[in-house]
Amino acid sequence: MKRIFRGATIVWVALRYGLDGLVLTSFQKPWLRLLARMVSVGRDLRAPRGQRLREALERLGPIFVKFGQVLSTRRDLMPPDIADELALLQDRVPPFDSAIAIATIERAFRRPVEEVFVSFDRVPVASASIAQVHFATLRDRQGALHEVAVKVLRPGMLEVIEKDLSLMRMMAGWVDGLSADGKRLKPREVVAEFDNYLHDELDLVREAANAAQLRRNMEGLGLVEIPTIFWDFCHPEVMVMERMNGVPISQVQRLRDAGVDIPKLARDGVTIFFTQVFRDGFFHADMHPGNIQVSLEPATFGRYISLDFGIVGTLTESDKEYLAQNFAAFFRRDYKRVAELHVESGWVPANTRVNELEGAIRTVCEPYFDRPLKEISLGMVLMRLFQTSRRFQVEIQPQLVLLQKTLLNIEGLGRQLDPELDLWSTAKPFLETWMLEQVGPQRFLRELRAEAPHYAQLLPALPRLLHDYLKRAPNDARERELMALLKEQRRTNGLLQAIVYCGIGFVLGLVVVQAIVRVSLLH
Image (tube, rainbow, N blue to C red; front, side, top):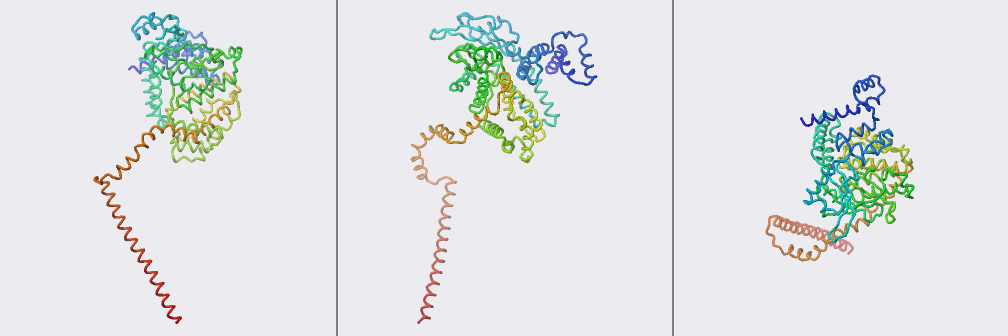
């Protein structure tokens, strides 16, 4: 009943805000356009369509807001007026009452907010679908003052998300049971992955741990700044981190006026993404413009500032290797190798004809090479690849859904920064270097260093272990069998030696007899 009620609520909101018209009026059939006019009778639809869509997504809750955030980065796929409105979802979701935020903080730390912080700004500086942020001043254990950002979870989020996830599970079950593509698309597994990420996002201690891990990983790269976490002031509902000062990356003209090298910024974004994915297997998976700023501080000028680490993606070594080989082969236009990798990884059935899959991939990808971002759409490439995957029964990999979403965000971000960016040529050198590190002597030395502590413990004990093994009495069944086999082997060896010796003696005897006969004939 809860799922049915939630489904009815979604339909009601869609009708109230005129979202049906956004869909139906896009068709050319006259009867569909007439239906759109009929269902809009009696409603106030004077607000622009983009505003109505944004307000409807905000009304429906966090899952729909996140969907709108993803769409907002794809201006190549959305009309400008809708894209501009959806961009407001990145950092302008209506805030909740500051009194609730303060009550949450006081409940988490069991003391008044005035005792937790030296000062606390009651007006939120940013509000998102899951939480909102307040600026504050904090005194640490050593007495030093720090400017911090305090992230507070929205109240009642778990119940709202559970309702939507329950509806998604039901719909996934329908797709799985009724669709011919159910087995290939794995809708239940995809929803389960989404479930994990959303529940992880509701735990701000986990988000703090994600931020700390990314900060460690990115420390030596010199391209991105990640805030320091104040662990003494972290709780599942509250997270306190270093306050970062930067310009939102969507304000490109302001960055350009400040002297930031925009094309380099776009290339750096690609490098950060591929480093996190292929080197670390741990990547920021919510990279819409609301979560990214650019530093104008002299010491870190032109570097990215990453915020909001509630959703991160992880890849296994096997996933990284197959993805890297696929990308490297793709950039070399070695479509046969791409097809072979899909078969080897089990993403397509083992009986797939490699030459046919190779030809299909070539047909999709070849027209898009050697073009800047403004002339291609990775979204369209993925859509055509998806159509091809249906023909060849390519199985969806649920663990890669976040990566695909993030890749679309990266492309949308790159398109805003530098439409002339050549994504392929920017990424190719990085992947080739990474591949050499994976198969060359560097990987051998790295793995040798990793195993060194184990070897250091094993080598001193090895002589004693060998002595004990050789000295040990053969008292168990396996060793008795081994000794019996050895005994039988010695007996067989003795028999074979006797046969060989007899044979040699027989041959030597014939030679001697022949020699005696010849000598007798000569005399």
